Length: 210
Image 1 (cartoon, rainbow, N blue to C red):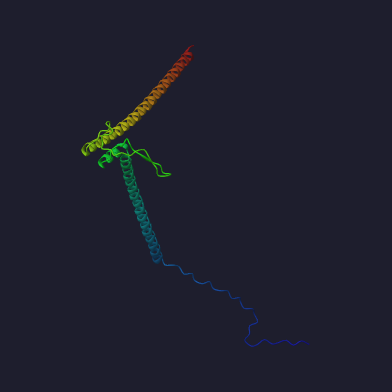
Image 2: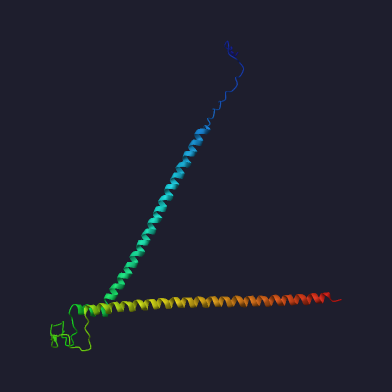
C-alpha cells in the first residue's frame, strides 16, 4: 500500500502564475539643460576657432615681415658687393695708392723665395720715372671716381633701356603677328561663308526651276 501525504491546510494546490520583471522607467534628459550644454560646446568651439585663426594670421604676418626683411638685407648685400667690386677695381686701387703716396717703380727688384736672394737692383723712385703716368690730386682723383661712377650708371641705364626696348619690340611683333593671324582667319571665314552662301543660292535656283 502507498501512503499519500495530505495537503497542508491553507496550501493551494493550483500552480501560481510566473513572475516577470517590471521594466524600469527610462529617465529622459531635460530639454533646457541639453540645449545649454550644446550652446556651451558651440561657443567653446567658436572661441577656439577664432583663437586658432588669429594665431595663424599672426604667423602669416610674421612670415611676411621676415620675408621683407630678408629682401631688404639681400638688396643691401648686393649693394655692398657692388661697392666691394668697385673698390677692388684698377682705377680705385690706383687712386688709393696715390693717396698713400705710392708711385710706380719701373726698377723694382724681385725676391726669390727659395733662398731669399734679391734679383735686380732696387732703386728709390721720386715719381717722375714714368713720364706717361699722370699723378692726380685728391680732388682730381675724387672727380675721376665720380666720373667713372656716372659712366657706369649711364652704361647700366642704357643697357636697361635697351632691354626694355627689345622687350617692347618683341611684344609689338607678337601683337602684330597675332593681329595678322586673326585677320587671315577672319578673311578665310568670310570666304568660306561667301562660298557657302553662293552654293546655297545656286542650289535654291536649281530647286526653283520647273
